[in-house]
Image (cartoon, rainbow, N blue to C red; front, top):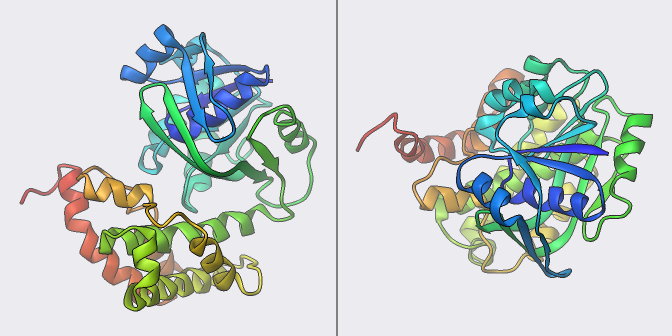
Length: 312
């Protein structure tokens, strides 16, 4: 397949590299130092499944020079989605698939507003990977997978074709669930409460899950997300909160979510796409989410400072 990775950060860089390693034609849409490094030195993955180097990769900051591709993997930050959707138009032809790999539950609608709903799949990824340096990505945990499917459910030939592209990949598995909306919201029920609690406490996972008060906050935030999902008509598995807590218990104690790291570093974060999204969608659905409202209010001033809209 001809695949474009739009946004060559940790997630896009990792999965794009695995697809290129398997022999697919992959072009990386990047900019700045990452683009310079990809053009000069290629791309390197340091992985618990085995390190590898792609000495030469195709990379550009001009999607129009590439033209329509079979699939676009979107790996930008959540607040960059509207801009990215407009910029990727030259990559999207009549048969192109667009697969977002972002945290959050609003990305598909944002992409569809620019590109139309036709090309957009629902999707999430599961991997613990971070960017060590421009063009260098470290896979440090979790069996990496991409979960995707048609938003309205049911099998399709195009989803099967994309899934088959991962058959030859090392440490990159494609999973097509019965209901991708459930998969997206269950991932959100994991990442939003964890990111929100850790950003407030500024503590690693092992600490916040072990202190009764922060653990209670974590569970309360999960319950609000679950109530919101059910109010929106999303099917969620029985016992999903308990299953999610089991997953959190298995995380390395020193781990920190990316949102927390950005907050602590004074960088723009995914606050609006996670905590803020629950506040907005709760208001739309008439669902009370008081813990999210309080957390969003507490974190918002520093987020605004990081984005340059507030000085203090």
